[in-house]
Image (cartoon, rainbow, N blue to C red; front, side):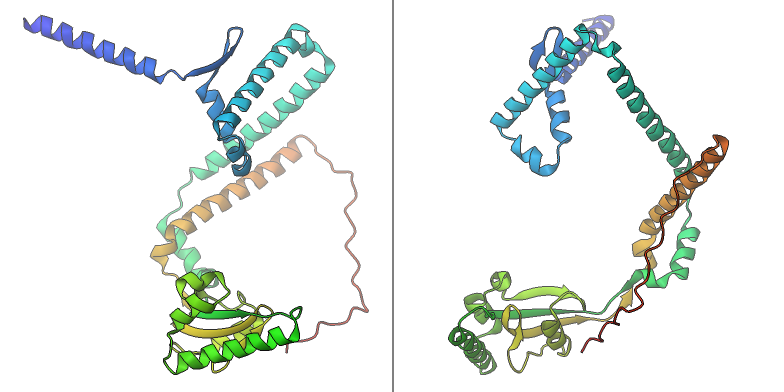
Length: 308
């Protein structure tokens, strides 16, 4: 085969391959309404518009079939409306005008946001914000603890409450004497969802746990266990602190990109506000609705009691 023929054959092969790819890229047709096609792409777009819970309802083959039927009806009724000339009605024109206004609002604000987003935020800008706002990047002190929960609440018969307290005390004694490990006791006796992890709650900070639990847990040092079961609204807890983490400030390198993104968003918000003020002035916007009155302060309201 001559060089010219080889080139021609290669070109033909490439053309056929391109045509095959183009055909393969055509979405699958799932239904038709006259000349209109409803494709897999249409179905995927309809599914993506739903919230996750509703999307799950339509994810089955039966659900997808129902959704395709809905799309068919949508197109059929729309075609019927067009044939009836409903697009010439005042209601249609009013709705289209409202839609046009919404679309123009979105496009105009997006243009302002895009232009503001083009302005570069430097590492120096981020560093300046980081230095001026250290409180934003503080990581509070935290502890990691495990617990064993023996259920008990005020609605239980008194004898059952007493039995739960005794069980917690007996378990604590067995752990202290080495008869059983904390993790084994948690897996075999805890009424909490953490039992499969040996009672591990992970790291938590103050304010995340119920007060009696928190007070007892944060009074312990790493490796310590409560000397007696702790009562909360959920029952009796045996608590063991397995790790501690001091308060700290997140390093700049870790938060730099987040700061830069936040600064860009801040500039965009300011740009929209500035454009809003310009447009209100340009078009003579006036708000005639009176300002709402501030809610009156209650002079006789008793001050909150300090926490004990």
